[in-house]
Image (cartoon, rainbow, N blue to C red; front, top):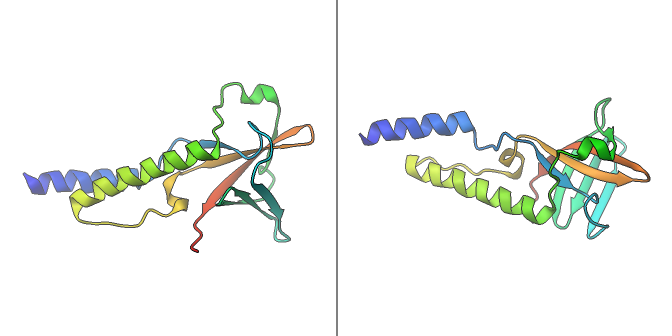
Length: 139
């Protein structure tokens, strides 16, 4: 019976791959004013965003960033960094709980927690949506 349970847990783990599959919509400066945030445009067509102590990166291409207006955002829940970090913590805990039952523990790095993250930035009179990757930084 334990072998069957372990098999299903491993199958579930491989299926879920440790990622929340729904996109996360994160505010850079959309919901609140600027507070402990920084945007760096690099010469290699990438952007680095820093929100509090978290680092996100985006690659500029024809679809990134997308220019949006307020009407595009009516049905989108944009969250602040505190809630984002709380959701990430819960996702890591959920994955760790499953792994403990299978005796196979892997580190779930920041870039593996969420499958897709969008960052919303107000610039001038535009709203830009960047698809970003959460960068793991070791201090």
